Image 1 (cartoon, rainbow, N blue to C red):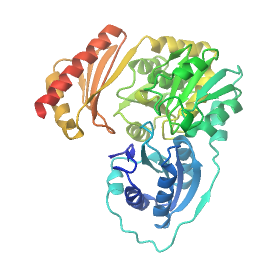
Image 2 (image 1 turned 90 degrees about the vertical axis):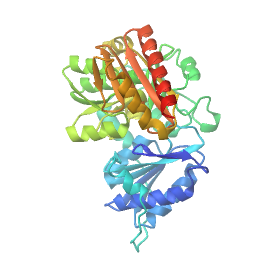
Image 3 (image 1 turned 180 degrees about the vertical axis):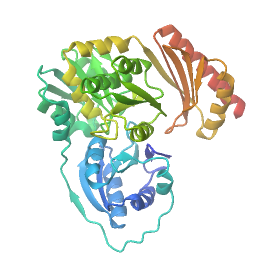
Length: 432
């Protein structure tokens, strides 16, 4: 089981059971000052059981529940702003047999200081029992106000991936003026895995061949991958397109995770914006956004554009509308051309989580003098030149160490990743 600010996740019935759901939701109730909480789930088969258990735990602590049913993570986050807190029953892009809990306070995910309180045992002092009611979301109407009407009627194929975006993403695009074809609407007839950033998206590539653009979502609807002209675009392209549209809308101050493409930073700076870098992870990006009053930004590795004015989370559904509104413009093609000159390779190597810190420490000592600049904000990032870098960091959710590299030269990028992976594996052998 993984217990991080990204949420609690595990294999349902194995290391993540209803016992843990009761315990963690009981503890979470101590953070809910409004005594009101929105709840929603993705489409995993275990979702109903987990949601009912979570609801019972919160209600016995005097918390009133507002049930969205099956709803994407961005929708639950958006509605939580009205009520003060929220829970999403999801394991995001993890395999179907996984499930988990994503906790929301004041419209944002929990931070490092709040996580221990969810993991600690809380003794219920409430004598009243909370109520529960089903609610409808204003998400679509609020999203349309930001995006506006789309005039070119782009033809779009939407790959739902059997996830919770089914009733939201196609509806938003249609209401904006797009012509929409939907594939993989249902989980048990879905031809691909839950994570569009790692899947080949073969069906979407074929289905969108005669369309203007294709969009693919993960199970809880916060990740978005773009397919254009038969080519699956990188996650950073999704973020870059969202950033470009937000620049056009007047946003200037950005926070990007440390592993986000240098091309996005350059694009922002060339268009009069500012950039600050955070640790990897949606919660870390958002934490720095709040501290610095940033207007937009995100995390390239998860294709996650974030617009705090609308939501403190990755916004796959809103971003699909923002990108659709750019289609057919010179801006859209300019962004693809500019950012397409950069190649990113993201690899991982298996390292037991109990050795993560020792391996990173040893890697740092070996590579500290190799690069022109070393940044230790999150793992170790070596700046090779103005267009090339490498990042070695431990995963927050898996028994792996991630190795990310970028360059405007493919062979150079491949060489960087190969050499760095070799060093990480050597260090792992040495500390075991």
